[in-house]
Image (tube, rainbow, N blue to C red; front, side, top):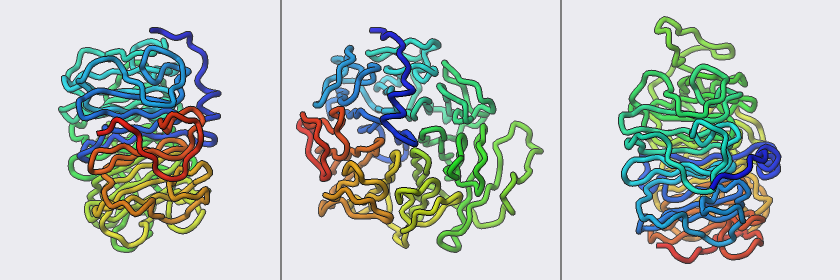
Length: 414
């Protein structure tokens, strides 16, 4: 079903306020792609491979063939062949077990990758490839990984968030650089972060709040490598290389003093509204960017233009970044959240903002978490699905439109 192309811009601005959202797509995590929190909608896979979605649906982002909001999970099609799902500003994307990529929802800037601007309320296959392994839906752009390690991008590109060296929107997937070593990608509001197989971290796109972590506030339209000095917590980040097409182009950009420091290996990354979070292979957690609501988690409200270590814990396993909040899971299965809590999106039973990680509840069985614009969804190790936060459009999925500040279980999972 095609939808008349009313503009998404106003709705997305209202939904995400100053910034929009991200959706995690970290292929290295065992539960990656099973749940996805978008700006004002949610999606999740069941153990039988069926796909379900709920929340705001004006642009068909639920994929159920309608444009009506759902306050409880609605099935997307009848197939049991879904493997990976991502939810963006007003669009969604998913991969089937056969490696095909499907998208639906708002398409004002080509974020569906269908070579036009038609909005769709049911999944549409993108191209003929059967090698897609991961996908991440940003506010108005989309990123995808193929099994050969190549990275692809499409949609809005005014801040260079696609990473193709231009500021031109793309309505079809475009390959990002010559590399075939990408293993994880996360699309934020207007920026993107990704990991290579050697554990290096690369970022590009909008940088008005330092969300790229390169020590500047200059936008980048090609991937730049980020280095966080692991010799001292909170040390300044340094760019070590631009992903230039010219091998001789090794200049250090303005605001960066050197390429010095030991090699750092990153294991996870999440791009949010205007902040970014990453976990190193040593289990330490680092966050940077916009921090007016405490979403960096370093106990302050100061914007950070370079990675800052959060506490001294070395057991962080998974992280997700929303519009104005952040959530992470430790290796012991505990879930922690911080940042804006106006709608209860931190899940701690209050609506008080937190500037440092706060334990969500007493459970020690959390396995995956996804932060939307103002709500959060998570899976426990027993496969049960839990949600909390803003619920204006039914994005919590519990059959109501009442905000909830503590995790509520959604029937049907596992």
